Length: 46
Image 1 (cartoon, rainbow, N blue to C red):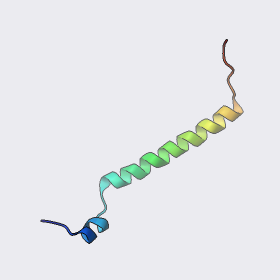
Image 2: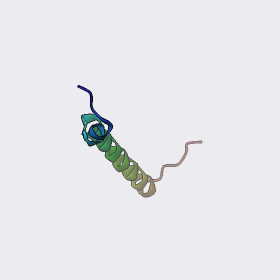
Image 3: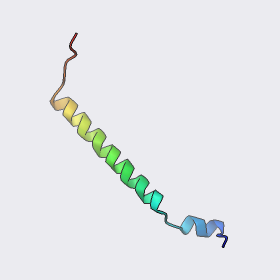
């Protein structure tokens, strides 16, 4: 079975959904890290 270009664009795959969840998780982690760094700044031990 060979899909045409239009059929390939209409196909929803599992990896695409996984990419959205990974991007959302990364964005949440980044935002939490920025807020944590702002509220609890750590000094260098030099």
